[in-house]
Image (cartoon, rainbow, N blue to C red; front, side):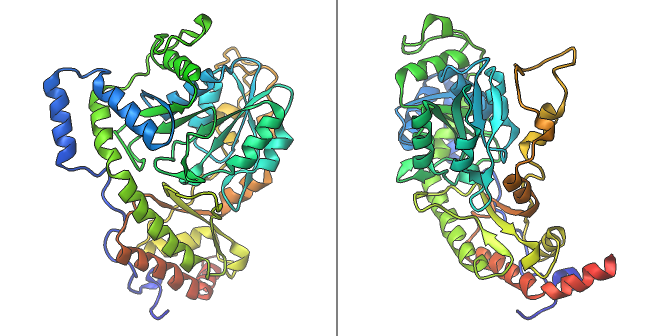
Length: 416
């Protein structure tokens, strides 16, 4: 590709903003909010119930229970599976720490199973290796809205009598085998925080197809109040994590846009994958054939330094940003390096979680995720919502930087 790298004084491929303004709204949200204001029902009311039913139906689940956020939903999902002290829950080490906090706040111990770096999702074979007599559930993470291998994971879970829970916080509109993420396991949690593809500023929802589980979740989120009169008496307790009707009204409007926006992201992701697959040293995330729709909250790829003339990932991203592409590196470390897992809580005066017989996270090293954290490059969902023309510019910027890799090598040698 002709032209000097922007990092070296050339003209950038992408001029002007790539990412779409976020959140998106129009007069529909304004009208919906005014209706709630004028109704004077600002707490948990009819809009919340309307959204629960609409979103559960949209994701192919029978029951939805709205709440204050995704982490609260995941804690309630663990409660719905009757997970508590003495139990272990297997999950992915490549995730936001909210996944783990949901498990820990339910009283259980987190066990990490390595990821498949080609998919950025938990590896079913590693799940099998991590199972112990205390394992009660697997919490999969559909990272970026790309479905995990649910058929294999459910098969493993069935063999060992485990519940499958889904962190589908990135899963609005995404599907596995034509069915919505969050409707495959016993229960799931989804987030509507500000950065998400569908947002109410904050908020979340727990989904399930089991009425008893839905009732236990409701008790956990609604200060012990039963909704379906199915939860056992000893499980009718919880904190107040309710959503209000102002948030639900916004989310009902946002839900109307999800399908069209997801289609734009799918088209842009397909275009970008076709380009990046041809560039040595860049490997787009592998999509399972069963992942029939991906929400692309984050578009991920691996940057393989050895195949990119030895250029470091940091220098590659710097060059790409100079070309106008807001690329990121994803999580810099596995979630098990979060300080909560690195403290010696056992010997301290304060123990925030039930650490009974917990593994030594300080010495934990899972090679797949360790490598992935060093190789990951990411584009946000707002970039994936760009126009077709703008996304072609993004693809051209990747090509330009790859074509000038040797110049980047020379630059790095001068700087060293």
